[in-house]
Every structure is written in structure tokens, then in C-alpha cells.
Amino acid sequence: MTTPARQKPGRTRSGETSSVRTLERGLTVLLALKDLRRAPLSQLARQVGLSVSTTYRLLETLRQQGFVEWEEQTGMFSVGLRAYQVGLAFAERNSLIGAAQPEMNALVAELNETVNLAVLYDNEAVYVHQVEGRQLVRMFAHLGDSAPLHCSGVGKVLLAWRPEEEARQKLGEGPFMAYTPHTLTTLPALLPELARVREQGYSLDDEERELGVRCVAAPVRDQSGQVVAALSISAPTSRFTREQIADVAERMQRAAGQVSARLGWK
Image (cartoon, rainbow, N blue to C red):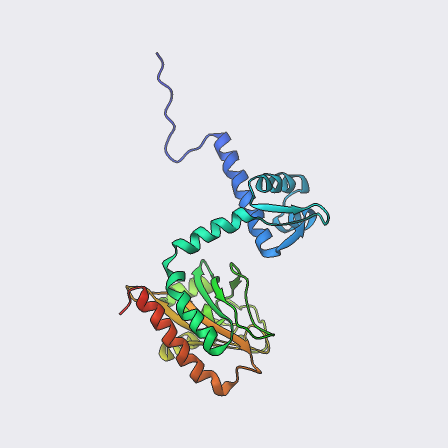
């Protein structure tokens, strides 16, 4: 009897490679749809750089599994309920979100502005939780959205306590995108700002990402003391004046400290 040839570790059969490639493309389509919110087939195909026919096949598979929804009247695709259920499983598992929820609720009740929680993912700050304020005009980010590290309150907090070499790798050599005239666009300008964040214990986005918007963020630490998240509050400058920065920053630091304590940091 002939013994079947054993496959070498790390190698895949051509069929397996094709399946993995299809999965990668499907996830790329789903992530693009997350960013676009709602989109027709042609726009999605352009976004992911695939043919319309390939994009349609991937979307149809995702739709059959509940990860994508299609509106027959408009021809628009959107993220489906199954994708939300996957995200919900992450939120329920993640002790960070559970630890932050009470403090985020308290901040909104006290300050009446939207509070966000963000974590570092690759070279971006990603919003993983949010409690909206009750103002008629309020600032908010969609969950899963990302913020640039060099000009957002959460981004600067998540970078500030990293080793400088790691921060440089995350940022790149620059110049960085200028969102407003206040954006710091070079490493020589940003590195002293990160040192200032460490010294004062919080970061300030003073109309650096969007004119008319001010944001304060504070670090959340785990039991080892490592900064694992940033807790932030954003508001129009008309409601969040320069004179209020120190008081709001102190309140955000206390809240972030409470979250850190729930995560085991002393």
C-alpha cells in the first residue's frame, strides 16, 4: 500500500490558496462597505479594485450568510445583521468596554457631550465604544472608524507612552496630512507634543483635525501600567472653550483612572 505524500508545513494546495484568496477579498469588500455605510455595486467595485462581476459574487455570498444586506428598490448594499452580531460578541468579551461603560455614562451625564473610547490598531486609532451626548448638535464618530495618530486626541495619547522608535514607525517620516492650519505635520513638531502629553497626563486636539472642534483625551492603563486605550470627549469650540480645558482634562483623567483601576492598574 502506498503511503500518501505528506504536505510540507507552511505550504497549501492550490485549492486552499484560492479559498484563502477569496476569503481575503470578501473581507476586503466587507471592510469597504463598513467605511461607505451604503453603496451601489459599481462604487464598491471601484473602492476595492475588483471587477463588478467578482465584487457581485463576493457580495452575494456575504448576503446569503447575513453579513451584507441588499435593498432591491435602491440597489444599495449595506452591512448586515450577522456582522453586527460578530462585533457584539467582541464587545461582550472585551473587558475594556465593560470597565469603561460606567465612567463614560457618568461623563455624558455630567458634561453632556459625546465620549469615545479608542484603541491602537496598526498605525491608526480605532473607536471601539461610544456614549453619545444629548446636545442637539453633537460630535460623534462611527464605531470602527479610525482617527489619524498625529492630529487626534486619542491618537496622541495612544502614541505618547510608546517608545519613541515605535512611535516613529507608526507615524512614518512625514510630512503628515494637514487637516487644518493647526495640524502638526512633521516629526520634529510632533515628538515634543507627545512629550508634553506624557508630562501633563492628557492630550489636546485644539482644532487640529477639524476646525471648530476641540477634544481632550486621557490614557487608560491595564494592570501592567501599559496604555491600552484612550478615553476622549469632543465638542464644538463654542461649547468647549479654552478656559474649560484644564477642568475638562482633570475630569477626563479621573475617569480614565477609574477605568484603569477596574482593569487592575494601581
